[in-house]
Length: 130
Image (cartoon, rainbow, N blue to C red; front, side, top):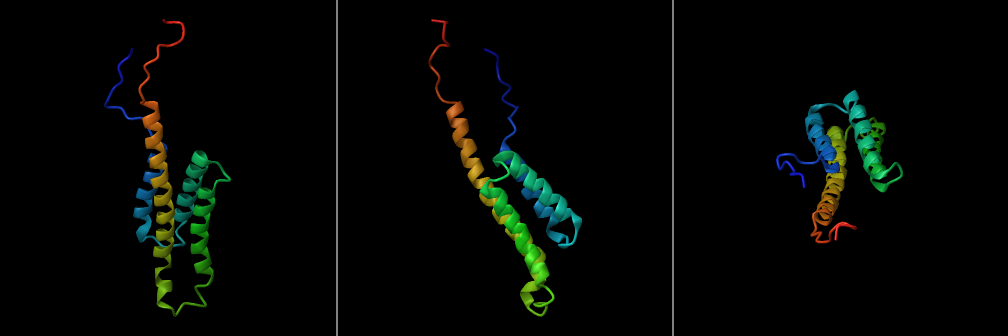
């Protein structure tokens, strides 16, 4: 049996989501009109589609988080005097962060279950070696 290098850790699906959450923290000082948000959102949707498929509820939830921000931008002129509108970029970031954190928490739980199943005791000999 070949030895496994204990220093190497297989890349998990959740690693991509963690990286996106870290990127999101760096975007906290940008404005909503910054094209970085469009690139970030496209990357995030691609990751979610790769993990869950295009029609999964998490992809839709993330899209709603980004559209919630867009709806606030459309209403900005009408509600410009309300103090809450000054935090539109922050609100959009918070919505994205909340959705991604929720997805990440569930995904990490699933990955832990998968790892436990894969590392379970296998005491049977392969067929034909008895």
